[in-house]
Image 1: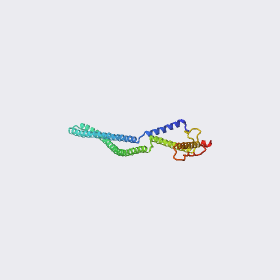
Image 2: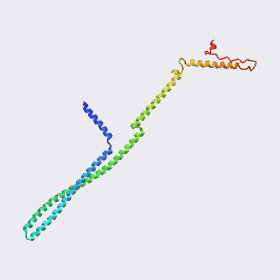
Image 3: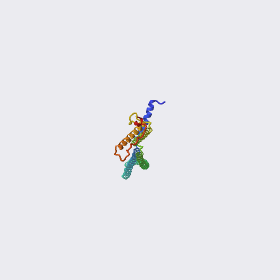
Image 4: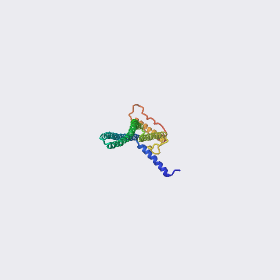
Length: 257
């Protein structure tokens, strides 16, 4: 079983990797890699230039020694013509040493030329690779930028983003609450219509039967008042106006007296 320290270390690495993934921009990584390759190419080119400079110095030394060799040979001939064999021998001895130096320098010159050719070819190949990488880099960067823009637009339209997601949740909660309140209001109306739920505005002790009786009593009062007014009118003929008999019902107080 892993220890607590190992688990904490693993968790820290996971969190650090996630943080790095969020902070890392592939375009910046590609640009950095491209700059590293360019620096490497510059170092190779400086190496080619250094080898070429060394080769040029060796060539100058060879030319100088060749001129010295020719001069010593001329001096040996002049000394021999003047009867100075010893002086001619000294000039030839020096000329031999110079010729040996020329041979050594020419060997170095051949080696430097080979190195220069190899480095020049390597620089050309590296230049081609750097150019190809730059083209590929720009293509990848353009694709990443387009994908990033498309993702942001899609998130803005569909509400996948964090802010729009919160707004969508708030709207859904408001809609659910509205539907719940509408359903509750409808249920209360049905209960009141069926009589299962009393109206709080009606005084205590009243019910629908009592309300109907009161309505009938009020109607009888209106009929009696109307008959009394008709009786008080002047007589229109020999017959007296008879007041209509009010309707009888269980709620009529006179009918019960």
